[in-house]
Image (cartoon, rainbow, N blue to C red):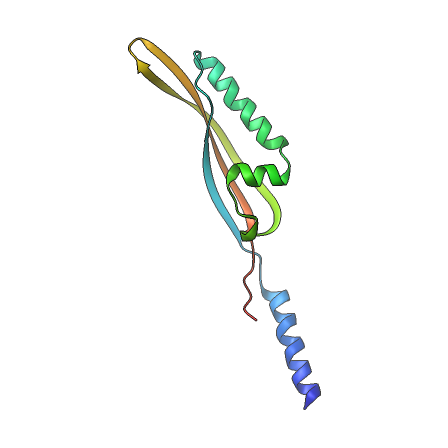
Length: 116
């Protein structure tokens, strides 16, 4: 009887590991840069921000994107796509500033919640 129970438990644990496919969460985030007086400079600043994102450590990227480490199976975030656009802002008449906006689509493996 003990052998049957042990075999049943091992089969249950083994099947969870074999058949439980990892799930990935995909999300989007917009990062805003500081306003600049030139539209071209704002686009350049946006592209520099994208380069900075690609050079970040896993921890820095997780913190920048606001992903909780408790929701991740591992600390690996994959950036799927980025784009840069510019917002035109005016707080006083005849003065226009340009704000870089970086759009990011990313994914990470979600932590598997197995109830024991």
